[in-house]
Structure formats: C-alpha cells, structure tokens
Figure 1 (cartoon, chains in turn green, red):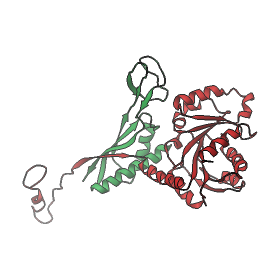
Figure 2: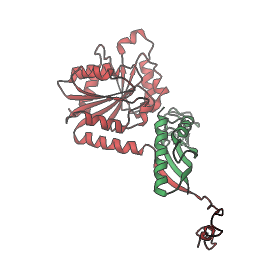
Figure 3: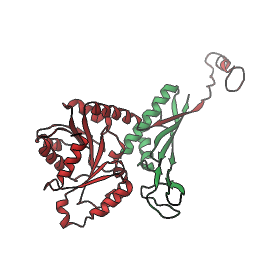
Length: 114
Length: 245
C-alpha cells in the first residue's frame, strides 16, 4: 500500500504548483507511470481520490499515462516494450534483455483554473 | 486590450447596470502547465542528505528488507554479539507497532531506536533522518536499518543507505524473487537464512538463486543460519569489507 504515500506526494506536488502559479483549483493531473515502477494503477487511482479530499485538487481528473520500459535483445537486435522483469524476446525467445526506462513515476502536467 | 480575444477589454462588464443589479461573472479560464516533477524527488533529496552524512562520517548504513518472519532480528542479534569487539554498531528498528524488536536488540548493548510507522508500510528518508538524531552515531561504524517486514513497498523508498540487503528464509518459497522482483532488483546482497532447516524442507536454493539472478545479475548471495551460526562468517566478511576494515 505504498500507493497511499505516493498519492499524498502527488497531491502535495499539485497543490504546491497551484500556489506557485496562482489559481483556484486543479482540474486535471497527468501522471506518468512506468511499467516497472512497482505501482498498481488501480490502487494509485483509488488513493488519489482519497488523498485529494478537502484540497483544491479534490475534483480533479487523474490521468494515468503508462510509460513502457524498453527491452533490447542482444541476439536478434529486436527492440520492444517490456512490462516484466522476466520478459523474453518475442522474436527469438531469449531471456536476459537489456532493459531501459520504465521506472518513472512523474507528475507530467496540471490543468489549473483561475 | 484583452489578451485573449482582442475585444478591447472586458472591464466594462463590471461597471454596467445599476447598483444591486446582477453582475455577469467572468468566464473561468483554465490553463495547462508542464510540471515534469518526480513524485519521489522529495524523499530522494532527504535520503541524499542522509547518505552524504553517512559518507562523511564513515558510517556504513544498510537497509535490511524482507518478508515478516525471515529472521532479521535474530540475524541482527547474533551479528551484533559476534562483531561487537571488532566494530561499533547501531540499529534503527522499523515496525508498524510495538517496540519488541528494539528491546531485543537493546539487550545486546548497542544503540537502538524504534520507529513505528503506524499504518505505513515502509520507512522513508525523513523517518530515518529523525531516528539519526535520536542515536549517538559514531564515526567508522555500521548502522543497520531494519525496515518494516514487507517485500513490496520498501523497494521504492531510498533511505540514504549504502546498500539494500534482502533476507529470504528457506521456510518461504524459492520463487519469492519471481513474485517480488522489484526488491531483488534493488538489492546488492541476498542472505538466504535458516539453512539449518533445509533437510526438512523442499526449498530449492539453486532455483531461488536463479530466479533472483534473472532480475539482478549483480546480486550477491550468502547462505547462512543465524540460529546455528553456519555461514555467518561470509556475512561478517562482507560487512567488514564494505565497512572498509
């Protein structure tokens, strides 16, 4: 359930930027979630709604944007999306891929209303 | 001049009409701002400060992570008793409730502070920072941070440690690394504990190491029993090596 503390951090970030920019409320929050970030999207959404209560982010829409990790096969040189630590190459079936990215958890953008 | 529609300004909307007449409210305008902010950045900033302080003072900080019941506290009790004449050690005990583990560790004579996370499932950098203030940490020592028993959440939260040590006991399934890859990917060392029980169990040590190696080819392994002492020398050598002794 680390999603609750992540949700609280996301709401804090949104409120901080709202105050810095000036505005009355946040109507949309875009969040990038890496495929290997260890975050359950459903659980995060549930926690965001709870964490936003009684804040200027309360009625915001939370858009979770999946960001896929990339696997590169050393044997057949194929590149593809990866969502597991145990992925094998879909081309030649080799395990042991070079995996990059997919660990991000970022607030990408906010929509602020005056 | 109005910025958005070149109409010459909306200011007069407010001045028309008699006093008391309805005023037309301005339209709500919304704007989108790019933030690009890492959600864990705050924790990482605090943890980086912890790490810098540990480095400056020659303190080897280790984040011990495992499922509940892997034998972390027993492992620490024995480690402290066996190494106390070679190096100074201190312990931060993380648990949701109770100070039972801190009392067990305190009985060995080292500095210990209990952090209760309440509903929280992991320690974070700020909790460790506060605990550091409560301990009398000395230079050239080891600080063991016993995280909350949980193989999921603590993987994401840096505490400022030099390394994560994941402990798995042979009474668990050998497929733990496959089920909880995040933790095994983040760790530097895997201790396989309670090997004195292997004759009575079906735990496949080679398979466990293979699963973990797939997630993290750099992961080191030490097989030991904190109860009988078998294999503990390998762990002590690893510790003293990391501590620069």
